Length: 140
Image: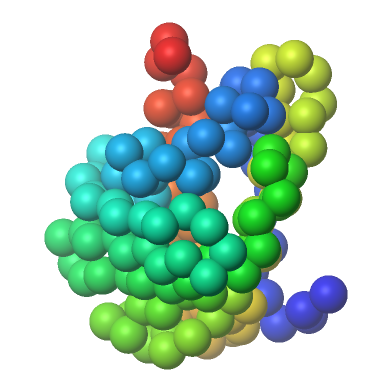
């Protein structure tokens, strides 16, 4: 396990399949994967191992490549956000069903939280996961 990484764990109000869909479908990523509360993004994604994705936000773009996809439990992808000082890093999202309507999300991002880029990403991921939580509270 990476020791100099951003780690965030949150409980989401939805079944694991619904949370996994939110993490894998570009039209859903566009709704929550943004570092501002109620922010807007445009996501494109070729959802397969080796496929690429891109998230365009008001303050910059992020892109990467899917390294591992294990539905509905795990996603691993590279993450490049040059506008905030991250050339290449790795994000791992692990999902664990806690009940029929609750899923634990564990996010690990291989950026050092003691750096400015790491601190910015920690704040961004915290906001993005709050956005995801809010989106999942809506009726499907």
